[in-house]
Amino acid sequence: MSSINFSLERNAFGQLVLTDADGVRHEGITPVRANPISAPLEGIALMSTDGHEVAWIELLAGLPAELRALIEEELGAREFMPEIKRLNKVSSFATPSTWDVETDRGTASFVLKGEEDIRRLPGGILLIADAHGIQFMIRKLADLDRHSRKLLDRFL
Image 1 (spheres, helix red, strand yellow):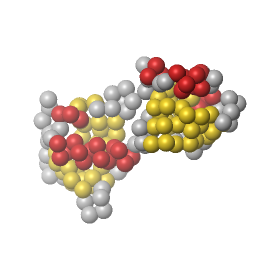
Image 2: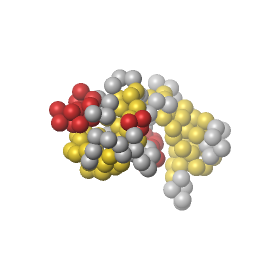
Image 3: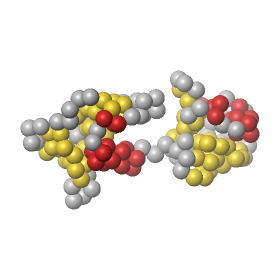
């Protein structure tokens, strides 16, 4: 495990402030995952407001609890990608269609403009973009119930 050579805190405006080993303060830090879907807890860059990497974190789990909590809180506010657990209803098998789903963040309804808005990723992951650009994820197609898979099969 690499040693941490920076500190992190929030300023009065709620922004992350990183102080590096030389005592230089970097305000408005944004954590960015290198692989947000396949390895969300590994490889996180702490970026400055001008887009430069100020620090690199190999493993989120290797950080002290307070530091990890700040980064996870910031990532959670920035990354909104509900994970679909169940498809309840699809208005039509032709697009555009309205989908009613259960996600890890509650129920949701969205419009799928076209089949091209469903992307297959390695490992059986599906990303579904709604008409407003919000990304919904199905982490593992095989984990969906039979009804959900049957509805989804019409679009794949």
